[in-house]
Image (cartoon, one colour):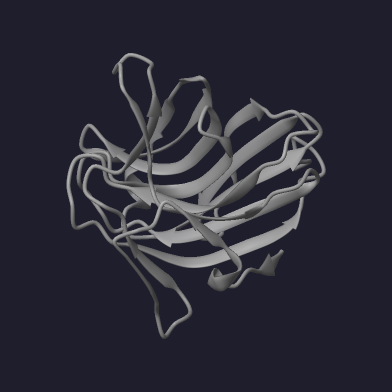
Length: 196
């Protein structure tokens, strides 16, 4: 995997603030009420969360690292893969019901949502990896050098143009700052189930 300069991406939805830090990271403040969701259960469409995107071709992968140091309901960060306003995937860590949850939302006109609690990830650096191969996106996540956890397998047609990169949002408040520490591109995972 090779590092991607923050300046290589293009903002889809501008944040309130984005500052490159002396350590090479990027601090991003999303706006109050920023969110991504379409229809399911809640009955609304939200299509406004800051995301720094770059082309995401087939047979490539994107990784984003961030410090999990926020605790308010629905605060979230991770990777957004965007085709258009009706077709996208967001994956990362979101605070829900009082604890951080690793998960993904896959949207094909209607959003779905899956989460799993990761309370031991609090205060640590999280890596979210999305690999695009064939007709699929494979989402994995981990902290430090722990084994990758498979978060989601989702369809994405190989002939579709997509972009991907770090995103964050704060649906229920203002004032969140997410500290992204790295952004990388590289080859797609060779298999869905790596040999142990």
